[in-house]
Length: 600
Image (cartoon, rainbow, N blue to C red):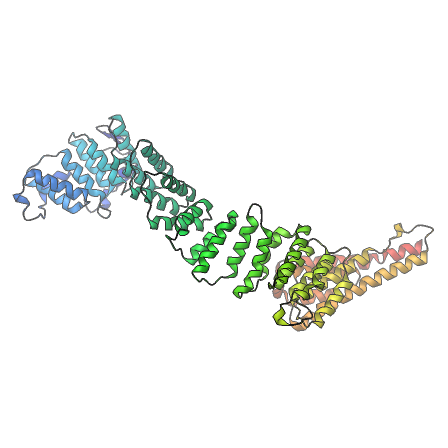
């Protein structure tokens, strides 16, 4: 039949939209292997390949065979039998033939929704209206070969004629919605089926879970599973479904879905998830603060003989800290268990504890006493745990409390290692050097003492050690220079000579401290180390402020080794501009303090 482009054609109440996929297919039929034509004319022109005994069967039996082929989605066989009925038995176009031809398109490879549309066109031309059987056949086909416009037209057609959906039809509609990604409509359809008392087959339940999880709709998948699990009338889910739910839910850190699958199938022993899946479950438990679930995962892995990695302990610690209320003591104790598995805690495993403790000085003291009690019970206390408490005090700018731990740190050395001068490592000293810088005022004397301790213990320094030493002395020099009295701060009756002496002493002290900072900078060069960008800039600017020409040496070395200093390539010009500005100010203004005293 020919139609005007853009028109809307109605066949016995079934409206086919001109801009639907069907209309596009009609407009592009020249791209198909055959032209649109009346199927019955085609049937009479091409002799089919038929079963050898088909001519012996009664016509009613042949129709039964036709329906069986169509139900099984055997497109070629259905077409051959239909051809025989039309060509040999001279059957006229009827609903039974069209229903079989339409239904046979459920074949995933040879079936097509556009062909169904053509059959519907032919029916309209023959004056045949769809019955409820053909409507359900169309719904079944478009559940396989998606065409949402055709589905909606058929559903609308059925509603106008008060045709009811069968159980299979309701399943086909829901399945089509799921396959099209129209999850809201699919779930509404399933909800309506439950409300109407329509039993939902296991395959549709499973399809809903797999489809929703694959689309990342884990919450909706969980609700569907929860509904099915809580209902005594629904069929039980297979192990594969639970496995898929645990995998996808734990990967997405969805706690409810993960917990349901674990508690109902892993904990009783029905499932034995992989180590990677267990790690995802552990991460989910840590995120949700379920320490009990995290412990169960650990126990499960332990029974299987899994070799634990630091990430397992890190997540277990996070689970205890995220619990309500947080169990900080248990979290800290986990770090002391790691050596039993021949794993020494590092800075990475202490980050979650540090984030929690850094603003809780009282709790840090309590935990230090807890470590003492554990050590008294012959529990090995890793140095990383003690460094954690020192780091917390450093963050709180409490140098004295940090030093208290350092002074007794040697008492925590493992007994089997014999008597030791200290249990500290280079991380310990690096943290203490930071504390010397951040305390008010900066304590360069304590830093010098710690340097002597480090050398006496034969602990090898790192680039960060030198970097922080430079910062200590630069900050101490800044403090000394800022304490120089100005002309406005000297009263008329003050002792001019005493003020001049104080000014000179402060300036000399500041320059001396800068000299020490520069020496530490030079000590790094034979080792082919460079300070961090901020440290380099601060040292050069402070040298420039006192008119010390060594500021240019710092810039020269930084420029020569700029590739070794993170950020120098991008911000090196800005640092040089700051140094030049400080140098110009120092050389042009002179010593304001001395001038003020002289004129006074």
